[in-house]
Image (cartoon, rainbow over all chains, first blue to last red; front, top):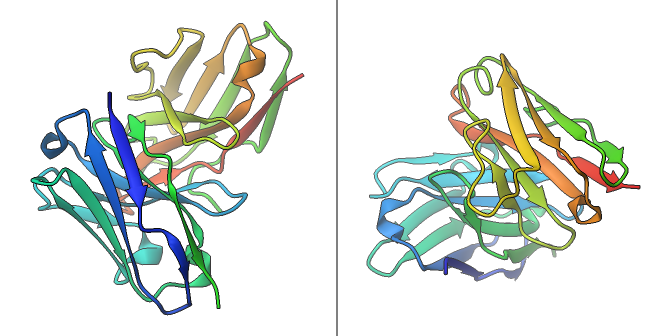
Amino acid sequence: EVQLVESGGGLVQPGGSLRLSCAASGFTFSTSWMHWARQAPGKGLEWVADIKQDGGEKHYVDSVKGRFTISRDNAKNSLYLQMDSLRAEDTAVYYCARGNPFGVYWGQGTLVTVSS
Amino acid sequence: QSVLTQAPSASGTPGQRVTISCSGSSSNIGSNTVNWYQQLPGAAPKLLIYNNNQRPSGVPDRFSGSKSGTSASLAISGLHSEDEADYYCAAWDASLNAWVFGGGTKLTVL
């Protein structure tokens, strides 16, 4: 059974940092593109970033470029999102999702709240 | 303002056929395939359709997708009460180098 379990969310002050993790199981992690997406309270889905199987190619939505970094550890079947310089508008539930195709499996999400 | 445009709401009665549309441009739907996702209240999204018209294993054939030019559609036939959810389209945008979503369509089963 495919499982994606996010962790690391919480309350952080504006300008602060947070590192999200996603533990993957039930599929060959090293052969899958992986993605982060988010959903602000009461709003629609927004794709955040993705990373190629070997970590050699990454893409980001414009609003997080230079602040967020996606990475992966294929030996640990884990996906990460380092979030720096957080803003109030980054408040959302963050989901990790498997690619090939995009979103074939999703985690349950972790809530990030940016507030003073 | 989402890059892909969807009507905010749609409705139908049980057994009816409903269509949800998604409009884009040459840099996204016009040149790449479209995925559709269903999000039930309080749940994570679920992939319904990929590559315009392909269903993942386990998705009923009541759900179908199509694409023409810079627009795409999701059709749900034989509407069930449990189909009441938010539906999102998405595509890769070659100009933005990013995946883009529609704003979502809230489907109400009357």
